[in-house]
Image (tube, rainbow, N blue to C red; front, side, top):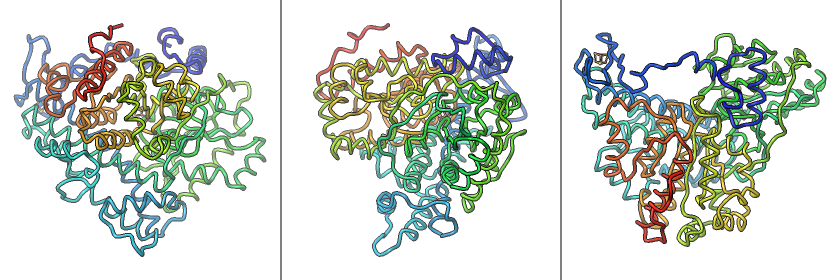
Length: 634
Ligand code: BF8
Ligand code: SF4
């Protein structure tokens, strides 16, 4: 165990479990980070390249050694190419997730699965309308089939632009056209990134980075947006719901199954299977009081948003949850699942069950998932988990803490609904200065930052200063556990925000879903811009990813900035080997897309940056604004 366990996380449950890890000598992500240190300086700066077999190459950041790779690529090209590939990997992960959900919709339409149904028929029809489909006189199944087919066209076919670009404010759409970043096809932009970054293709760092923005937009306004919308069609558009979070959601006397990963097509059938009488009886026969499903990471967010399912934790909790000795099975689909969980599980009775053929884990039990036989497979998985209850070692069970209450379910539809069907009250509150603006605090945990500290500190400071916060992904879990996502947390907000939250009965921090659901934030931002007849970059909005780690987070950051929202990163991206790339991303982009990145590891200082930015934007709109410089640095 590296460092004192209390220094690694602000979360009480995590601290208690880290102590168990320490006492039992169980390796965790923090130990492995320590073992990697010092991490490679060239890679941290983005200055190493292994894109071809003339290399690997590296550029000397101090100017004494080589300034060019074997092919002649300089620091700018190497850094830009590396960043481009990172964005493409993240965008591909989100978009492939979107395609998997889309295939489930297609199967529903084709009538070859009875594991899923259309839950939100209105949304299905609305989407069909957006895709230009005639729905009159057609049954739901036909519409589902036709819509799925049309959406698949957004992935591969040659188009001028993605269909959801119709949702983008006209000025922004024009701007993207002008600078050549309009995303044409989801697969196309990602494949083109791999092509451009092959040796000897795109050797202009600005050109590479512009295409990276286009690739990220194919995620935000493409693959991820399809994932969100189709998930709503299949599983329901979220509405405000009460839930609970932290490791206290595990129950000592029940079969505990954690659903970990991202794709709700698996977790939805597990929920159905766990409710089955046959499964309930089996659990009782094994001596359990029932089956307790809990979420982890974004699959957990999907379930919490729609069903209020309890949330066990975020990214850095995935190893610790096994150490409770009370977890009978962890079902994983894909993304953000550390291979390390298999090793930790060997020290306990927990069964790790992998489910997607594209995401296997050596040492785990693999049960291949097929949406056509979803429920049948779901039952097989649940049965296996229940049977594992018998292998528990009672004296090793330790469930820390009692769960914290939290609210979830704030889809755009739910937010606009809470406002009485129009964004007007929110806009009025912003105009009056009761709410200064809004910030999205999103993204991961990263052991380089004290677990949850970045998210919770930044969020607290923002709400204290009357900035409404929306959260997704692991940030939502962090803030939920910290007690900031109940209506009562309005007491922690500034006077104006408190008043609005009280009037609407909402928390000052709104859970908008999983990471693909960052697209809900785009839709909300576009709705506000349209309402005001302006572009997104003119609004008093900001984004932040205080503890990001994943390639998906880089794609999200890029599409948020390209959509016109200033974004602060808490972890330094590997670009600092090229002052030109840094200058472009942290400044020059502002002149191109009206937004740029900042990097600020200290969440107190990040809050100041965001507050100042919001005042600048208020001023630009002619709203009562404070002088940005009057907001002191911490
Ligand atoms: O998609 S926030 S650690 S779980 S990447 Fe992963 Fe990051 Fe969590 Fe969800 Ni998003
Ligand atoms: Fe080196 Fe150029 Fe090959 Fe990269 S592409 S490994 S810089 S020769």
